[in-house]
Image (cartoon, rainbow, N blue to C red):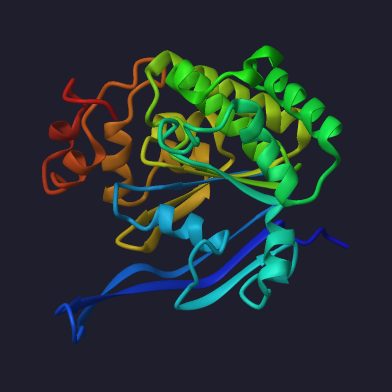
Length: 294
């Protein structure tokens, strides 16, 4: 008997109403942010959701966690539909589904020490007592390459890469099985990106975690993912084994994204939005340049 996939997304749809008027709000249209998205992830696999800004990949990540409700469709975690869960059931399930946010400067509460930040998910999920939670916090800091003494400091006392490590530690605190990395490296310097990718790979190797890795950068995706789902305008355009899709992309859009992604040790290239706006150009005109960071 085969294992049930950790995550199954089936026909996922999210529409946002466009309204006009301050008092009597009138719906004048719809933004189709996610349109009939379907995929599944096996235990221990890393699936990448890629595409330019606004393609619906981050919205898909939030729908998976039910940080927002879908217009229609299904999300099942270990075979259980999450749309039907009440608040208590959803909170208990979220212990096993966590997220690393893009901005390490905005995602940490500046008024809390690192120790308090790491203690919070343990308290919310009623894991351990005060002493065991403090010990878990020190352990988590060591896992992500920081010192246990850092628990007494505040976020502003750390660099961006260190803050993202703290964000990773917080996401790991409750012992999740599924981790959504929402552009988790895009706000970091090149060398720090490589360090965080190495850390995520090491954590996956040691824990067997399943990742949904959301990114616009195919250079980063190539380094960490097993399978890839390419999104554009809320829809899936292409999917498959990462190495195969990147070696021989079938869609012009995927080829344009690939043109924006140079070697991950340099990370210098055209912004994906700039590249895909030139889809009508000849292939040689889609070669990377030094304009901006991919």
